[in-house]
Length: 214
Image (cartoon, rainbow, N blue to C red; front, side, top):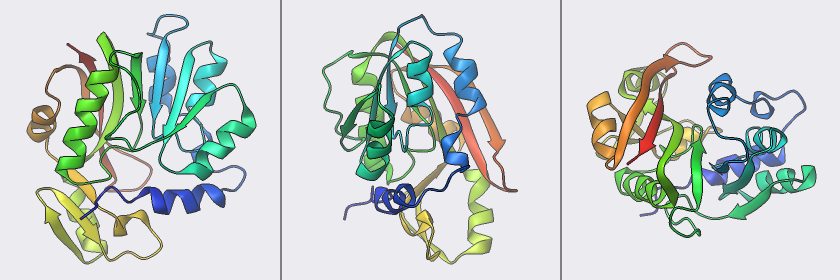
């Protein structure tokens, strides 16, 4: 059974995106992270969407590649120009080893079961140069009861859930984890920062993590 299917939802979202959408503004965490990076560093934006981070990073002088499985988002990036785009799955990155100095993946890699997630993390490590950083988010187990209170759901594999929530991406698998489980997933990385934080809605707990590739 294929579990990394959320790109189907997001491709439709990108095709109908409206001006002023929050998906067009870069996250504060990304702006802060960029200030710590060497000028001209090679960055992979994994799950780039419509390019809110990739386009901003390119304007700061970084060498950016935007990758996504949803072609309508990449089409928006191509229209803006200045960033190389690649259509591919997150667990099979079409790049040589150590291609990038840094990898960014915001609200992306938890869309799948544990097998997909482990392959994706292994691929991130493979394409990162030693000492390079990974900035990303994961879904916290603290969030799971809030989702269960809103929608009927079922666990399709360890920590991977789908919900009866038509019109949302929650009909596709999402992975929820504790801090200990998260650290076990990221073999070959050292933790630089790990914080469990609510996003814009109550109960929307996400892990914010910055890792260094050993």
